[in-house]
Amino acid sequence: MTSRVEAAAAVESGLVVGIPTDTVYGVGADPLNAAAVARLFELKGRPAHKPIGLLVASAQQASVVGLVEGRAAELAAEHWPGAMTLVVRPRVVMADWVGDAQSETVGVRVPDHPAALDLLERTGPMAVTSANKSGGTEAMSDVEARAAFGDEVAVYLEGVCPGGAASTVVDATGPRLRVLRAGPIKI
Image 1: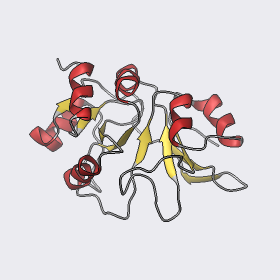
Image 2: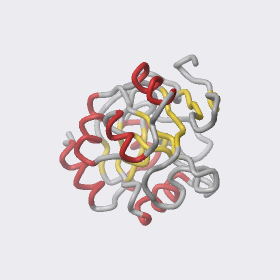
Image 3: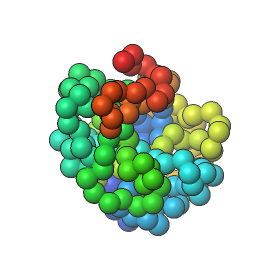
Image 4: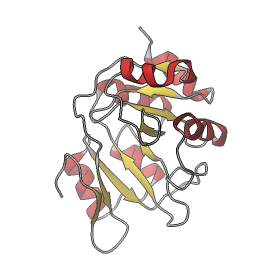
């Protein structure tokens, strides 16, 4: 069994790790480490124009990396931890492809999974995307993620993802909320 301490050390070393969440199993890296984020994109075969969001351990951690204010803060209080990603304006400069540099936004979410939350408390925010090759079926467990990526991922935290569907994505950057992707939480 891989420990969260080993996973945190791998993230700090610039490696990609596997992480269970409440929605789907993910693969993630340090969002401030450009080489780690590039490895994440290469691993997935993800197009460069498709930005990656952040998982964070709490609304407080989200507020360090993004402007979670007004209606966004209300939604966060209502639905975090949970299957809702908020698209907000970033407060910090991150590696290319984390968030959308052209629209100056970043997606942030607090997952409702104990292993994910523990790891995020140890590492801080992580750039995380679903554990699958781009366009493929999302993994729902560490076993499925390992089958997809093998040794390309440094550490897999054990876990099964109970949600089975990607998070609801809500753009909170404008005067009105806009649902960008429908998901488990109805807005």
